[in-house]
Image (tube, rainbow, N blue to C red; front, side, top):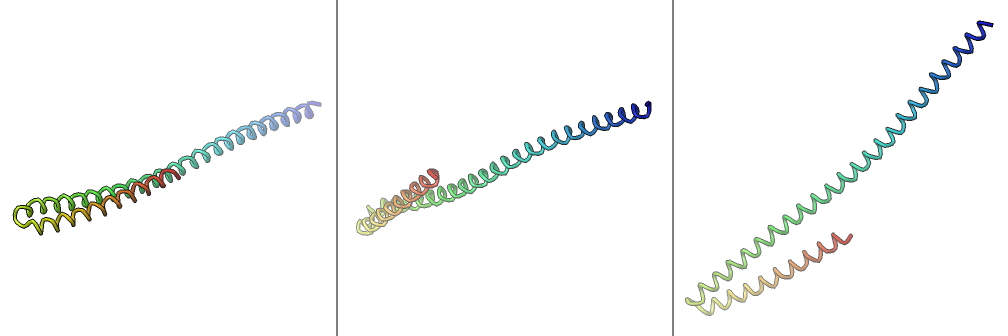
Length: 122
């Protein structure tokens, strides 16, 4: 009788330990699932950051190109102004070139603004 009681207690103890292990493993599994979801969120954030960095780089390049074009237009207008008193015919030609430059510059700016509008609406 004591042997059966001992075996029953031993079996119940082992069963209790087994249930504790199953519960502990289930908790660890839930923690791993949460960690995986968090890693996926971080991966998406990194992708978004990379896209934003690329957009910023593109915008910086466009800004630099725009600044160079405006500087060239400004120089052309300065030349025209100085030529006006010396050689009005050349000044007129220089002003025509400046006018063409400004038209090209406006078209480029419009294209960039349109492109940016399309990028941000997507």
